[in-house]
Length: 286
Image (cartoon, rainbow, N blue to C red; front, side):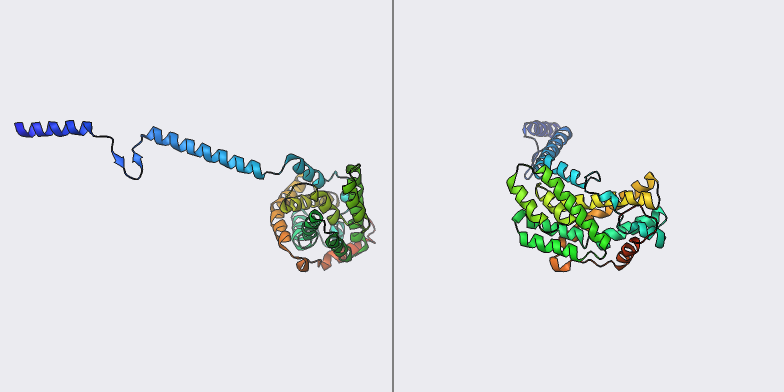
């Protein structure tokens, strides 16, 4: 018994002299508080690194504000005066409720805007930035040639001229920019191509420009629906929310289309636009 007690005491004494247990892979064991503090520090470092990356990739404030400005329905280009066949669809196709109007505009976004004007904006933006006026001219001609009624062509040309006039006012005293405007004005400018020129002067990526263009279109069309269906403001905001949720997908599709893949084929919309030209009572120019 005496010897066993001595041996046990010696072992305990020796254990007190040993260094803390060490995991060969992880190093000395740390307390829970130390582990939590280290994890918090690591998370803080990751958050700071993420914020730094976001700051580097974020759109500069001036460019962001320019896109918001271009997308605003208050931009003096006359977009609020067109319904793009919606007014005629109310009279002839039974677009008389929030749900039907919402579906109509959603279809127009994906089947007409995304396959046509949005794809033009994407290509024209790149062409303006690289100074390829031949490609710009070809895109502008495509827009003119694919407007199937006099009203739709009137809208594209009138809004294009108005945006060129607005840009000329903004660009006073900048000869290089004025030369671009003169070149565009000589083409009978259309709105998608003029919008692309305005956006090309920002640092915005193609996707951001398409989102701005499409949202500007959506706001104008919802305002047309409020007046022609008619609808209340809450219904209009619900429709706009739906369109806003679908615009990114439409922009992605438009951005991926090549020149030979663009389409301007919406025959029912063209028929309604033609019928609108002789509609007895109307609020809008198309």
